[in-house]
Length: 120
Image 1 (cartoon, rainbow, N blue to C red):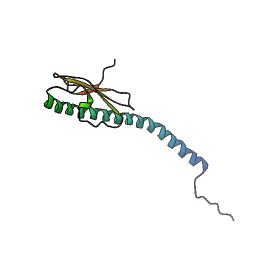
Image 2: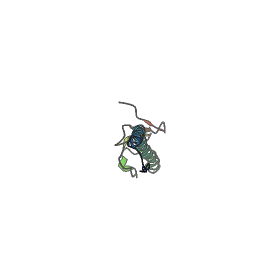
Image 3: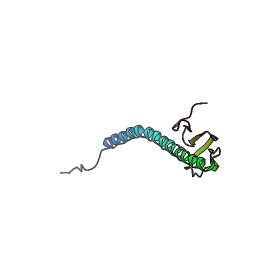
Image 4: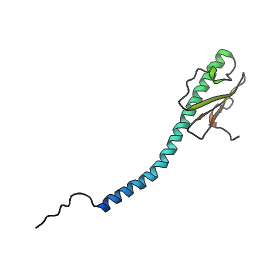
């Protein structure tokens, strides 16, 4: 009499597992893409917050706000471009964008909060 070896998985069982993993990956991958963009936006917003603080330090020393980011003692995050759009004795406007994000973030000293830049 011959005894069958019933250990292991059948081909059908393995295919079902592969299909289930594929479905889960198809659901998860788009979620990770939006999470990465949120992280890039957070880096740009963080740089703007640091620039706001640097602007206040610059104003305390010079009685005017900086109109050039080189005048601010800042180290930008990797991939973030920070621009000082205007700066004078009455206020400033700045913007920042991460190269891997499609969003631009702006701050105006009269408002004092970071918001998405208005479309041109």
